[in-house]
Length: 420
Image 1 (cartoon, one colour):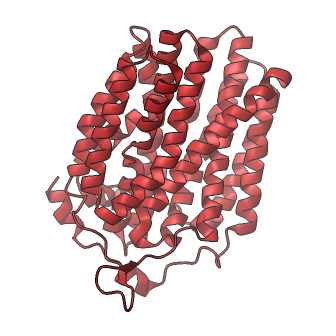
Image 2 (spheres, rainbow, N blue to C red):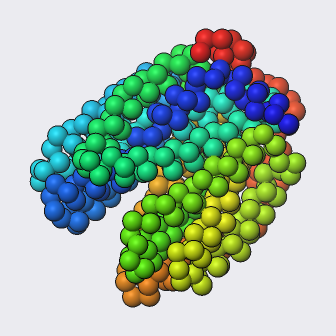
Image 3 (spheres, rainbow, N blue to C red):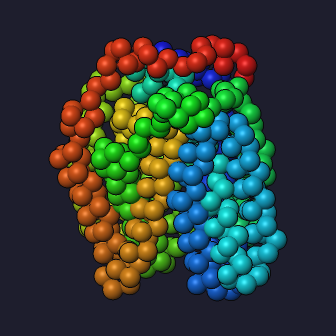
């Protein structure tokens, strides 16, 4: 049963997963870290919200940009430049944290824009290294989803612990982690140098190449699905915060968030060890439908115990949804634009989370936590409806055996692993 897990680790060696996890932490730490720091230094929650919003906007716009550059120029130079630029921007935000709001927003936007996109780049590496072995590809995406969820839980928790000593400590740690592990990720042997091959445009010489279009209906639907997953979580954040404050336990909000992330990560790991026997199209329909069903009890929660139980159960559906959408993206995205496609889906989550949090705030003010949770349920239901109507064999076909064989990675996996 553990064979797929061993094969996944063999793709890159045991070092890359650890480097990848630590390299992703800054992206998970900065949203809450910037909010806490600027609120503390400025004394203005509106300024803090502006800075956090600018950071999220930069992350959403920068993801596809970094992915596109990595596809065109190679992951090593682009990843290295992004990691160093991101660490510098985070450090500058800390240094000028008592400055004017427009300046802080501009720096936060730059920090978001330069996030090195370790997750999308790691997924594109794993897909390239495992191409031709669908079972290993599926297990690799599941394992990477587990790493994502672990960072998603660990990053904000680290910031919360460090903020008790100094609100700047979390962002300083994020800058350090980004500079060190972002660099190590960029320079890892799995990031082979050189540009991906593309087909020459007839009549335009060697300098011009034809690139397959990325924004197909299939990709756009997956980005929409990711945005809805973000909306589910963003609205839940608001509902949890509102309810814990009403109960006089605002300190419990972080623990409740973790109760959603931990089971999600465990399910992702289980999907690595025991790959699903059903295909990703059917799995997407089933998991989105299950998420819609298990979200409904949120409408009835009225205490910390029922809230914790409902959020924990809902967390079981989060990673399978995201992992499945990444798996479908691997089927339909052009191989030479895989990093950009993966980053585009990541931007969908970021925008959805921000939109969910922003939209549910006013709702919670008038309808309480139940109103915010109702928005989560509506987003989950819409996600299930889209999956039911669009996750078809015509839109997401099985890869042809000849195509699998024709897209083998440029270097054997064992060569990469030995270099790690």
